[in-house]
Image (cartoon, rainbow, N blue to C red; front, side, top):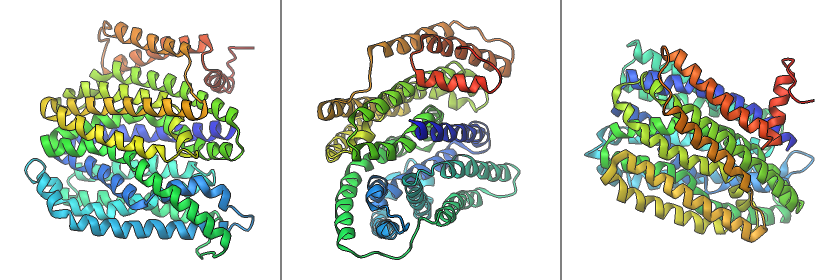
Length: 496
């Protein structure tokens, strides 16, 4: 866990720095200077571009991370992997763009009545999808090289600072909304260009193809794996967009603005988990290569417990401060309380499932993930179609929570059956019980002083009660070790 621990901590720090900037954008600037429809447009364009990029990637990114150890060579040509993978994503972008243009009319017709603004700007998905595609590609390549910090910085911090600058220009009246949208898309090219230069600067890239019998065999095997990951893994990018796109089509961009803003708040909870997965994936790949099942059990357990503890803590911090957050936004956004609840609970389950998905998709049983993904997509569409007309955005959140829980349960059961690996322990229920007790306690907590004072007191109380109980019980030696090292740097020693 050494490299996983170091890099995931660095990425987590950068991510939370980015979240601070992101909260300024999403909680203060966007809701207060853009209409709800305009906020909904900005948010859903990025979500749809993510799906656009995933369809275009053809599974190449997953294949790069999985098979890089087999392509790797001392001369840094790596059997031409960079050339062949770049060619694959480029071809995928061209094919999907043609398909998108052919289907443009029915797509715009679907949104024309409830979300006309999305119909007007839908062609911007092409450049936004392009830059998202290649940012993901360069990120995967750097992930395979265990160079994950720079990609996190440019996306989590730099990109959001640029968005802050642009929304500030709009708030000052320097640019109009059309210029804002155009600039919003162009800003997303900055991280991609930086990663391109950084990737080329690693010296691990060769832009010429390599032809040999070994390369043909490797490309063939990696291509089959990538195809299955494309068919199965695409669902992980589609599902978070299905609820947003169906909500925009059925209820309009205004409800979509509230929903996507709550979804962004929930994303703060996932940051440590995503950091661990990002860094752990090449480690898991190498453990499979070495057939180290015990190592897989150990890293899976550590990731699962850390995900549960951190997920519950962050959920509590945001939940007890929701009224303070809503006081900074227009009144309409307060209706998103139950959206946050359902999405947050779903993501805690997601984090607690640990590395089960990573273990499965990097194993020889990866084809099963395609079947599970079909279940996920089908269940997502069905539950959203059933619940959105009845309950609006709350129905979309409830549908997402349901599908996330079912999907993770299926994968956990499968990984245990196939490999005898499961990350859970009965004592983990103590974390859940503690969280429920604190939610009940803080429901009785009166408002104290102004916004800043009240938020500080609530956050401090949650940190002391929850963090203190977890630390004292030594539930996670890994987390306790991180805390001990952090405290020792400022001269505080709790344990001998």
